[in-house]
Structure formats: C-alpha cells, structure tokens
Length: 273
Image 1: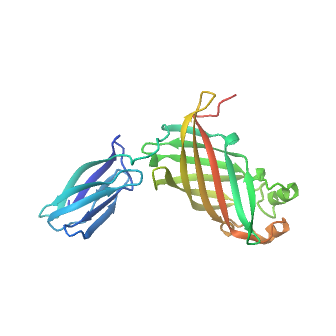
Image 2 (image 1 turned 135 degrees about the horizontal axis):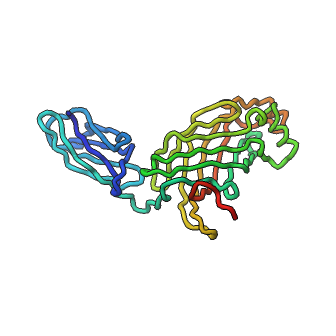
Image 3 (image 1 turned 90 degrees about the vertical axis):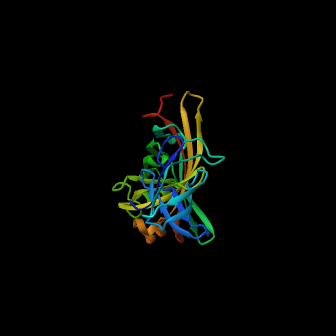
C-alpha cells in the first residue's frame, strides 16, 4: 500500500476520528493533508521517496509531530500515534445513559421584532435521552419538546400560536431532535449534527455545544450540563408569516436563534424525589 499511514488514538486507546495528518517536505511545503476515519486511520496518496515532517492535530488534544521516511515505493508508516488532552481540557462525563431533567432545562427561541427589538418564546417541556460514548464522538442524543407548552407571556397570543394558523400543535404535538454526528471543536466545545422535526418538516441542523462539566448533586445523583445554540430559518419549517401577523407578532425576522440550557442525570430514568 502506497502513501504515509498512521493510526491515531487517545492515550486511553480510543480512535480519534476527524484528526488531521499534515505532511510537509524539508522545505516546509505541504504535500498532503488527510482526515482520520472512524477507526482513527489516516493514509495519504503515494509520496516521493525522502524525509518528511508529519503533524497530527485534533481539537481538544495537543498536536504531535513526527519525522516520516518514505520508501522508494512511495509508502511509509508512523504506526500508532497517541494524543494527549490539551491543557485545560475538561473532564468528560462518564459513559452510558443519561436522561434530560426538564425541571432544570430550558429552550428559548429569540426573533427580531421590528428590526430592533426581540421577542422570546420559551418551551418549558423538554425531555430526552443521551448516550455518552467512548470516544465521545460516538455519543447520541434523542430529545423532544412538547409544542403545546409554548410560552410568550401573553395567553391569547400563546393560544393562537398553538392553533392551525401557526404551529398546529394538535397535528404536530412534538418537536423532535435526533443526533447523527458529534464533532469536537475545542477543549469544551462540539458541533452536534442532527435531524430536527418541526411543524411537519424535517431538516438537518447543527448545534454549537459548550459542555459545562459534571458532578454530584445533593440527592445522590450525578448531573452534567451543557449549553447549545443554533439558528433556524422559519421558512424552512413552513412557518407562515401572515399567521404570525394575525397572532400579534408581526414584523418578526426570518432567522430564529435557539438557545438550550440542558441538565441531564446519569441513569436510565429520572429519580423520584
């Protein structure tokens, strides 16, 4: 097999998916750049024989450099490369199942109103299950929000927003999210990709996630917390502007900012207090 090959793992032995191998020649010219697969494996195209510098980088880990020797057949091997966590990296939550605690979680949607003020909508009834994986990129999220629980602070407007003029919560009672991919961006930040089901439409979205840590609570459980944000375009989910005007929220901007503050408890179910 031609090209420079390596297998990238954490010091605990987990494959580092999306790690990047960059290869430069002795003049500093980049000659290859490849991304690790789900098994942490990387392989470049065939390279001219000689000595090269190989640098492996991955978000949340210290970079590492190696000298690589390419043989006359264009191939070479770095073997197994172990990456250490970057300084200041936060301790990850224990692997296994976690459940979202609705009493300590919130979902807020914010839209521009009249171009210079904002309207906030709260969805207080959020629930779901999180599987924390190892490596962390194998984690999984399945969550839902009860659409009928929408709150703007004005009952008449809330009732109208629940109606068929707008969100039609009888036909679409659940706002659902199922993750498909998790990519680390920094020591405590990730991009969570998944499918959002809203108002009868299903779209892929990306959430910017910042992990807050985990620890024991006063009731004998273990909790973790994270904050997530994304931007939605209401037209992607067939949210009708004229219906919004009749609901008393005219001149609402097309882009909606979504902010989630989520607390999850370790285990298969919420504890009984």
